[in-house]
Image 1 (cartoon, rainbow, N blue to C red):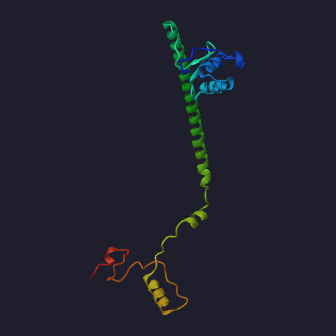
Image 2 (cartoon, helix red, strand yellow):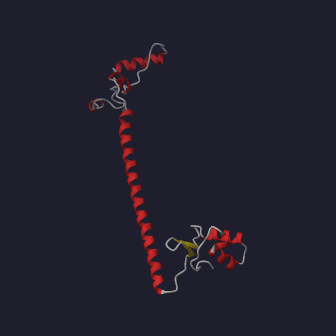
Length: 184
């Protein structure tokens, strides 16, 4: 109903507003309801009524002038307005891209600065303590002695944590040299 409303002027005084008078006439309502209807129709989400900044008038969003020359002028102004909005959006996108790039560079610099701090240099003594102990070569006789002592129940005997390097020939345990398991 109001999408094709012709351009009308709006005044701060509701009694002198052409737009409110047009709404009151078409809806057949009082002034308060016309003001609420006008406010809802000019809302950016609904955009039933559009403000023409050049003419300083409100008009319906689908309204076109009756003459062809005026139609062309209205369409050209609409196109120019859209071009300005596109240019503004492009510049804002470029601005945000620049800001994202700056933030990424700052973030990568902070990571580079934090990495050396996270791994402080340790002294040689600390590195030796942190390094896993090397397996010490145990004498097979000591291993068997400690096992016999543990089985006999002697309290001083302690079993070694490493297996003997060589084993009897009938065993399948790994040995240091491949010929140790060889028969004969």
